[in-house]
Image (cartoon, rainbow, N blue to C red; front, side):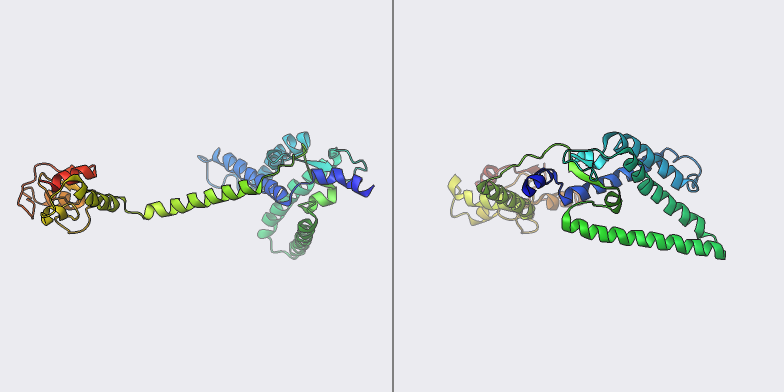
Length: 305
């Protein structure tokens, strides 16, 4: 009988990471709404909303609570993850939504608690009287105890996976799936193949930027020169396509000026801009036009001249 009673709960149990993700999505939504609201007063006097900031935030969070949790039994983050609240105090195994009192007390504990903390901080910040000092100590003690309770509740949540916040535990509002999650079985061979291809793709993404494509093309074109019929005895002509006539290195973005020699683009372009009457240092040919070599066939044709 115990296994039958635990079966419905196990099928609807929400993962811990999903509950934490829902809380983070709620925080991100609150920050987004507040940033959009403050942009409406961007052209006004600076600090206009500073004195009423706790009340304005409370009003915005109350507005979100009214059209999310109060009407749909779920926050925005929970709706995205197919999660909703359930009345855990209900004795029936069937789904029971949170009662109106639970929703109201949830708003009081979350929205009202944040407003009270911020307003008390602003109220006691510039008060140095003895009475305010005692009240500040009391409020600080209460906030510290609440934070300690949240820490203890979080440790229990990590162990059992229920009630991510202390407010949910006190009010008996537990997160469950809206629709039962279907069990998906993935084959071990399919997972290995996907991991292998993902690892290989990441390796290529890391390796390809490290390869000098121009140098590789020059090397391949120099190897293809004997296959295209270049004379074996003309060593100077064979080596002209393998190195720049100015810097002596492998040509980067190889270009020609009309002779049999090849230059790096930056070498010949900078030399031509510096000296309009620039000539080839190997054969003395004047620069007529700087043209790129687009394939290894053009390199072999230049070397065959």
